[in-house]
Length: 527
Image (cartoon, rainbow, N blue to C red):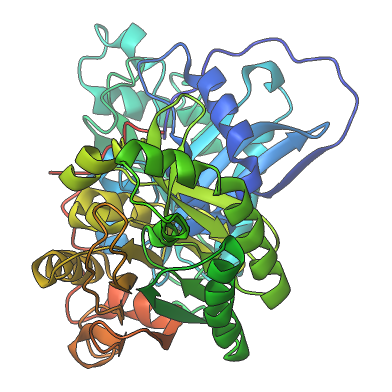
């Protein structure tokens, strides 16, 4: 468990102190809280992505303390097997670099990865409240107990007197010495299993050591069979219906005609009670065909920029009217700074609009459109659970999909635009690889047809599809739905999240579980 900042004076306020589950809306406040708590340490604060991962991977295990409507404490936990948690480990290794990505819905123990309290609110026994709530969760879930590696903040000052850290822990266990953290944990009926050296190297006060602790649930016998939970700690529906549109690029005479073509497919998918519909990358370049003359790349970007507001308003209206979540392909967008980014707009059926820029523009995009890469990659919270979007070339970089999966996504949407079969196969093969290595669904949507008067859009090649991992719970060849190449159409499939969870935790191979967190991890430095 991470260290906390020194205690400070309690603020004089009147109000209620409550403990509740953390939500995605709490994340900005949690980022600010954790920065305050760790500002005097060498330990970096959690990123927004890591906090999203914690909440998405196991919502029931993430708690906040709220006082006068202000978040003043945070507690993070996840389920894990004793086979892993009872062995020596590091904080980075067991928590998946802080994302709680090693959460196992069948794990028989609760692992405590974080407890922190605002320095201005020490004295409210918030830590005790968190511990009590954790124990309650453990008992209600029928788990064997709680495991973590606790801090030893008094050790650095006494290391010369006690060079053997295990001897020092023994002195505290026998109540001959006192440590503010370990003594508190022993008072809460935790037992010492041992000391893990280099558990959290940045914890200078503990000299990197973590005291390996366990609390045994008294209502569960040691070897009892742990009951299974159908919800796996998640708050997403078990099956979603997705559609991918293989969209024909053709000349249009007006913006309204363009919207009518889009609306046709939205209507079709809504008639099939779809949850998501995906359109291809750069499909808004069709709007350039309204012009009677071939525009230069610079003129094309300026012309498209004029449509951005109309495009987003029209697509948002379609999502609301047809009650469906629309991944609106991508649209070259001039940013307030003046730079041009290839942005996917995601229109949810509750009326909210989200953006995902392309991280890696292709050489052609840089040459023709002067497009620059974005620096933000985050999950998008929907009524069907968190999703991610990787635009075309981004699917060829495995670090990006791993970053999204660490944040808890089950579906990655890949709008693409490729001119020839070789380009298409690069995206297709890499997308299929992403499904295997991350045990996640990938939905691809591409353009067909041509736009003779639009630069770099002369010909298109696509075979849109919905891809799955390759294991027994899924469709043959890892393909849930496919299309005929270069024909305008739509493919639809029902995707079950419980099948993914089964594959991740009990599949023929278990790629996510078998990652060597002790050797490698993805560290995201963007936003």
